[in-house]
Image 1 (spheres, rainbow, N blue to C red):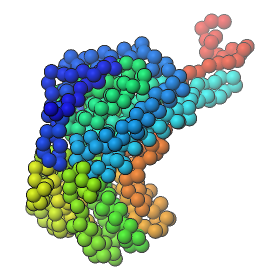
Image 2 (spheres, rainbow, N blue to C red):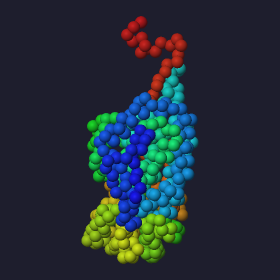
Image 3 (spheres, protein in one colour):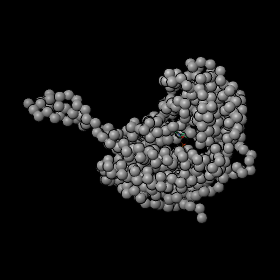
Image 4 (tube, rainbow, N blue to C red):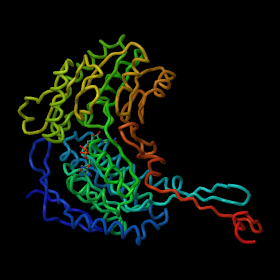
Length: 495
Ligand code: NAD
């Protein structure tokens, strides 16, 4: 019998009438089945979250109580880390090393960070305005938050959002991608044991068009925190407009890594490989354009290509695997179509870009990492997000040219700079249009550092103080403490 994952609504597990088959992308075989929320389940989640917020004890709980529960969730994740990493790998195909050392521990860290910084972030601020007038700035929860999560980092992104939403005192309805709901549904088991009041966290699974739309358009939802594609992001902005909801939009990217001639070549090559090929390139912050100063272009490309050709494709649970399969057949077809279009437009494919022939990979949605050169800014491959292991390598001869190429995008999510010159790195980072820039490294996310893009990569931040603030609303309370003062306004109409 394949395992079955129920919904988690109002503190209880609920098997629904309809269930989706969940595939293992490494084999194409059915891994589990997951309950899919119908209209009744969605309504129940909405009623539960609303009641838990309006009448429930969570938003009124002191910060010490909130801290205790958040730490219990973190501890629950760590206690179950091995199983969660395995399940995430089975459901997403990403190598077990990534889920074990990155996704799962980072998820626990987010809960720990917000638990340990609640006072620091949420204590009210008092401003002395004039004379004895004082303004208190109070961070209140926003209400019911719909948290909509993509399939590329299902557990980690869900935990980032959940840790912040709960730290701020909100009730939530969490919706994972219907391709990858398993670890997020499993989180319900950890949450149930912490003593969090019923209805504060509800986890419902289902496709975007039905479940996602129903949630995002409902008047009982006060805010939407969305991470996903621009296409869906635009739709959600439309749904949210009707009731004027607060939104965080973490959307797509087409980021550029810039390798300067003084860079440590080995570091730049190794870091650039991670910057595009981790998680099979299915990263919003993927450096899908790598721009190399012309003096070192040939050396960089030679090293880079040699290492790309050595990347070991394998099933997620294979400890030797450096790259797993893409998430599903539809995604593989999309990536293949981008590669095909790039070739037709005249880009030169240097390696990969096809389905591997190894018999042990048959059945899975594997795809050989592709490297293009001779790409120009008018080509689709330069402008459009592929969301797969496909990179364009280009050269530049001046810093102005590098900045112009890097910024020639509708997106503005992330950037990477490889150089030994700190001053130059600082100058360049000021000129790159992106919400996060890594210098001599890639992909380091810290719970204390806000993260979020500009332009069509979205708006709002996740993580850090600014991330948490997105999940709160700021109330100003102005108090006149003067005993005998007679501010003019109090006597305007009556003496
Ligand atoms: P997607 O937009 O297809 O789906 C994201 C989520 O939205 C899923 O849970 C899906 O079920 C839901 N959804 C789909 N249609 C909906 C609708 N009409 N109403 C409400 N919800 C709906 O994205 P994906 O394919 O899961 O993820 C890949 C995309 O996510 C890429 O574009 C990537 O760049 C982006 N992403 C961005 C970030 C970031 O932080 N900026 C991080 C990860 C992924």
